[in-house]
Amino acid sequence: MALLIRNGEVVTVGARVQADVYVENETITRIGRDLQTPPNAEIIDATGKLVFPGFIDPHVHIYLPFMATFAKDTHETGSIAALIGGTTTYIEMSCPNRNDDALEGYQLWKSKAEGKSACDYAFHMSVTKFVKETESQLREIVADGTASFKIFLAYKNFFGVDDGEMYQTLELAKRLGVIVTAHCENAELVARLQQKLLAEGKTGPEWHEPSRPESVEAEGTGRFATFLETTGATGYVVHLSCEKALHAALEARLRGVNIHVESVLPHLLLDKSYAERPGVEGMKHVMSPPLRAKQNQAVLWNALALGSIDTVGTDHCPFDTEQKLLGKDSFVNIPNGIPGIEDRVNLLYTHGVKCGRLDLDRLVDAGSTRAAKLFGLFPRKGTIAVGSDADLVVYDTSYRGVVSAKSQHVNNDYNGFEGMEIEGRPSIVTVRGKVQVRDGKFIGERGRGKMLKREPAHF
Ligand code: URP
Ligand code: ZN
Ligand code: ZN
Image (cartoon, rainbow, N blue to C red; front, side, top):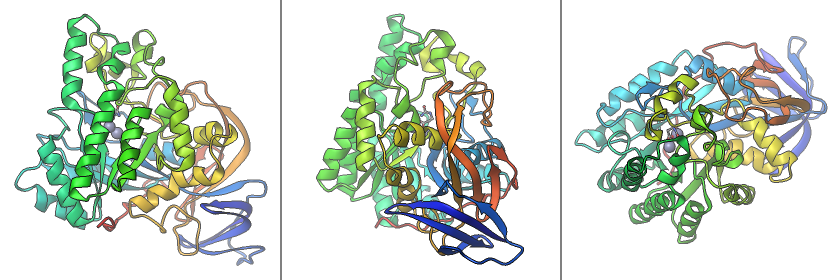
């Protein structure tokens, strides 16, 4: 079936042109003015609208056993929420813990998505220990098309790796040409600070941030950078939250270290006062690294505008009110995570582009193209070009709405961005040429999503 998206303003990195985009089967085959189409082509009038490449969320959790419970979304719910928000591909963290077999874990994560996701997807493979079979297992996983790893310097005894394991992972990644994403907080310091605060009777969610201060994240970021420098591997700091950690990453980049940086929606838009709200309202805003002092936000936005922060993900990780209450007696038991998969693009457009913090070029780059390039998906994903997958977002900048749990598709009973206004939303979202979303409604094919196989590219 052919599809013509007519007369939109096509926005890609480095170009904005008034054009038609013609799609045959799953692929963009022509871009130009006044394209002629066969009589049976589906035609979408994009006059007055922007046409973006499908957005890519490089950091989501869908299936996640964590902190004595499970994140709430499935690939059915998470992918529909993603698509309604303009995200046509997400990269999920495959996260077996230290006690699990890595390969069995990888197969389990794949089985949760297969035939279920409505958008395309890929995985970052978490390395949560390094034992004798790890190298051969990781080689098999890379050969299967998962060409990025994840390590956690935090979450001691669960997901966390020690320095020796980090070294071995990076050294192997360098040989395999695989990029390594990393959650950078010093696990030992977090554990000590948690014990100290609890011993002082400080148990509420407002103590989560003081248990993982900025210096602890900066140390983790700097250490990861030093290990990258030593091994020559390429790294990507996930959910970097504060100025101190940014300095650690950028100093390393200036030394020639191959280090990239992701920020996530909560750190750009929410500050630690949200987690200081009494009771469960505060718990809803507990994630790691924590929401920070507000002055960090301007620094993150500026670095994002400059391209010093490469990408914006969500770290989508939904736990509902009942689950958050697992931590009612101690902040260390509050399941960490804030959902955002559905709201990322609209909030970035509203608080970034409309507020003059980002230009459209950076919106597309940080929200799609840069992730595609870093994670081996470009130019199949991340751009609008002849030969690329027809993942397209026709964006209506005249739409006005408010983010709310009442209208969301994420499987959760709250929304961390509740009440924020949005000025724009996708009116059409396609996945490989098929219209999956029209004006905020999923009208497409469930289970259409494919796992994207990726080649190593970071030698
Ligand atoms: O708080 C967070 N970020 N939860 C999900 C797990 C992780 O660290 O990414
Ligand atoms: Zn993390
Ligand atoms: Zn995460």
